[in-house]
Length: 235
Ligand code: BEZ
Image (cartoon, rainbow, N blue to C red; front, side):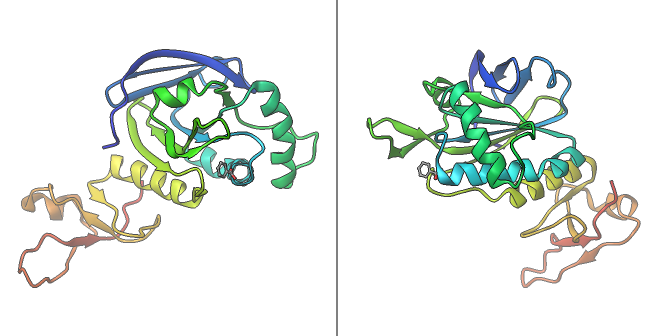
């Protein structure tokens, strides 16, 4: 489980949409953006230290290029950066250019304008080791994944100096969506289609019924038969 977030209600300015409300109780996070996001299924909030910085520009361009992959997985994305809407508007021209789009292309997802880092502080996204010229901690590179039940499912927190791997974020989404539907867990470096692990909590007498395609028990020195592999279930 991700760490808990506890705050009640927040609204903030947002580039490319009207406004956003985030409502959270322990382990539940609702991201509600008026208009397009009213009925989102899965949601990802990803944060950035500030506009017009090199790593952030590459990340936001990558998200733009990956939108068809997020759409396939029924995921809406929303960025956050600690500058104003007018700054985001100018910065998006650079992001589009870096991502290979021309100026006429409409920037395709919203970015929260967290000018005073109030939201980043509330969501515990600060990188205490990276300070801006005024000595204020920068916002870290956080990723929050929220499921269709508004349940907060996963958080990553990267330092400001390390860009994220968005292929890993897609991989994690695939694992979350698969393991919600099938009684499996996904092993190290798993990718969609690879063999999965039978859930160790599944009672022994149900294994054959749940996995008619077969299960391979991997022999181990302990003699315990807890490591059972099965082919990736179709979902
Ligand atoms: C960047 O996005 O390039 C960046 C931002 C803040 C600190 C370090 C790198």
